[in-house]
Image (cartoon, rainbow, N blue to C red; front, side):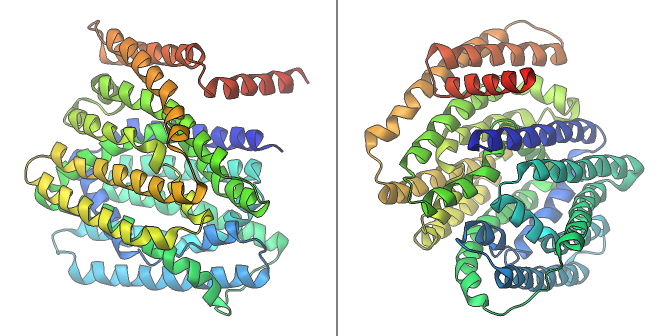
Length: 476
């Protein structure tokens, strides 16, 4: 199966997941208040902060490594179990001791999320094997199953009155589905017993991975907890839903690339290939997809929020517009970690990552003293710094020329201006919010498609190939 066919399968899964999450976002926004979402977001930030040592990069290690034998799998599983269970139990103990007695719901959310994180290693080997072998048909079925459990489980328990705890239970159900599938797989293909023998090889990679992701997680978590502490649960709830809306672009346009990116890059390096084409192609594609979309979202934020979230979330409109600024730097930041892993640049990026997160926390703290919109600039700053710093490092290894970097952005910028003009004009009529949302979205979609071919963006070739592939499959 070619890389394009694998991308089609990956995107099919992401579109299915996005559709299910779209349902969840629309329904839950009408069942919960900003304060309730803020309680869940606080619990999630605490668990993420407390679990920075859990993710030692076992999954990426098993996908990236040239040769993986039984001992590598056993060691990866052993380290994952030790790190996740010790961290999870400490988080549960900490919530019991330190969460105030009048914050029972927050304590329950933390416990359920901690248990969910403790289950994650049980399905790790299955996911690593499927990703390494790029078996995206099987991954599609598994991911859709877990997404259904997450979405419909969350909706059911929130509807039954569990509030923020219902969202946590949905994540627990998602992990239970993955564990069930992994158990069936291992029953058929053999069980893998955990081990800590020869752990130094994985830990050499894992410590860097933990430091990288741990600093990022700490920066994001502390920033959210700071915003929640200074602006209250309602402010954090608004931020949570605003980020959920702006992440639609990742779900709709970009997330399908990630499962394919690391296996593809690792294979290219193993075969002695050049990553210059892959990197510049990524810049062209991400800018051509994300820049027009984020501008559309900033212009049409009002009908988007009223349609997807409802009247009680109108305060999220300016927050969304601020967060859309991060889209400017998304071509550089998206997938940057995968390139850093393949090029062995994690060690060089680590001290820079520390500086980025300290700046992010400072912006969140200072911004929270002014307003929620000002606090959100912290996440824009984090995205911009991550993108520019990773570009600087990758450029040294891949030997990219300045002209080579600029060229992909020219047509993307023209496309953005073209689609932005038509989106702005489409906002002129005063229509019912839902009708306006459909109208503006339709105009944007048609304008973007026209711009792709009008300005001869590289995406046009991929669209034509995709339609040709589908036509051939349908006529076969």
